[in-house]
Image 1: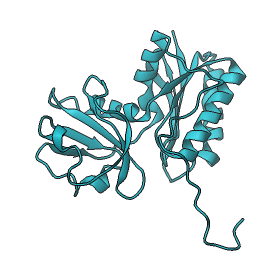
Image 2: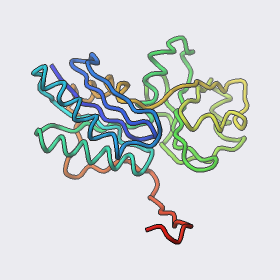
Image 3: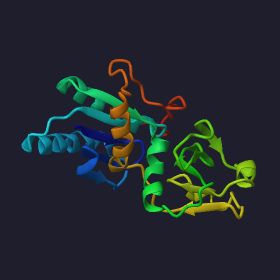
Image 4: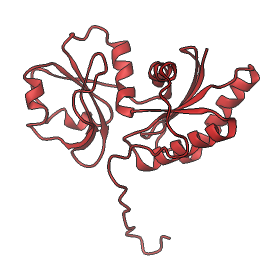
Length: 232
């Protein structure tokens, strides 16, 4: 028996969900732009109230750990830690790119057996956070901030069909041109997709240290100086 609160804030979409024994029993997502700082607290409070009203005790909090938005990841991690400390719960940290593969596997079960999955989170210009996974979610390449040019994934594309998806894949469509390159629209990291991975981690006892956990930023935060002399 397990009840897990899921928090996802790695992109412009902010979402929370609750799963019980692998079944999704609550979900909420805000998709109207950068929102974690304004929306997450209320969304988590509503999820906690829902479970409390049904007398369902939590066992853990699962967090999408990155890579992704620096600010979003920090806010999500702070909220997850706060709930863990406040309710004496364990923390499960899930790679965001792996979370993004879940809806592809669930909604596109007709993919060839030798397919590779390539989640992409938009970074800067032609750069994306990405990695390659096989259909069993075994990671085939290291997570990296990759600049996409016409030679990107050339070696892998000669051997496998690759399915690109995520909010960074759209800007790569005209650059990655190969018969084995396929693009899937509408894939966003959401809290509801975290459940299968979180349940597996919980069953295996794979928990993060709440005190020392840090999101996987991948790159250091770079502050941009405002051009507005009146800004503070």
